[in-house]
Image 1 (tube, one colour):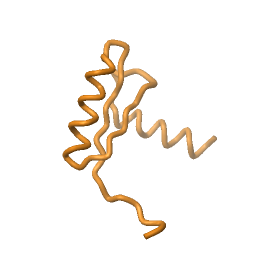
Image 2 (cartoon, rainbow, N blue to C red; image 1 turned 45 degrees about the vertical axis):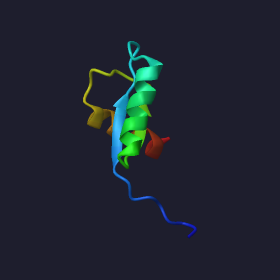
Image 3 (cartoon, helix red, strand yellow; image 1 turned 30 degrees about the horizontal axis):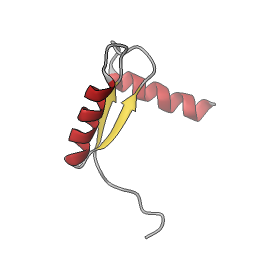
Image 4 (spheres, one colour; image 1 turned 120 degrees about the horizontal axis):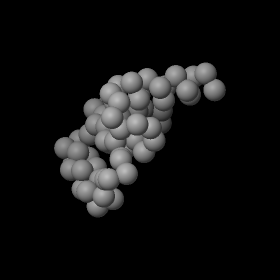
Length: 64
């Protein structure tokens, strides 16, 4: 069925300089196995609210 998108819920992970790659992959596999689409943020300040980070990504893609 072309053109259909998956209706999976999304789980957001934020990679920091202290995050180990193996730990991040394990978290991604875990949430994916529960049926989530996993998004990993690798930019920006991890101390900020993730919702603000998502808004900034959307804002940057709309304006530029």
